[in-house]
Image (cartoon, rainbow, N blue to C red; front, side, top):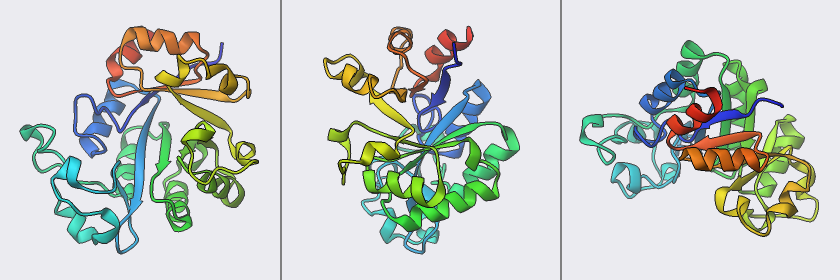
Length: 240
């Protein structure tokens, strides 16, 4: 049986502030095969890492990254809202994250979620991934079929999209540009699961945060399993 990939969601976000360098360090140190992150562009066009785009939930500032310069983004505190002991953790740039990964785990796989749905975001992200030697080990994610198609046609990237009803700008041929498909556990356990299983693509299951979840994802044929809490995932997959 082909190895199932263990992926940390936003790093090790059950125990550390999501999408921060400390979260990704912890995930790599724990032994994940891959980690996932989310890319936006700052107002001045720099790829930065955050899930929501708006900095309110994680940083307490009600502004969107697209409207903030990199200098302004560097002033955000991405740790305090998670736990005061992480006060001062910053919103990393993509380049900072890749530099850390190359220093710690140059073999790590990367789940690259494009959240800023512009071709410029894709182009700048791909360029940095190639610069740091990670592109060939990346899988690109997006909830937008136009972006998946662009990544495949412009960059020949390895892509993973989601079921059609979750995707923006989905077209009749959109599945043709998927290499793999992402299914949350609710879909995995639902009556529609066979529709997506039978497409014959590798399946990413997310987020499996208990041993029971992980075993269920394995039973459903997952090729990659994503977790917020990576301890149960690693325990099951790697016997840790």
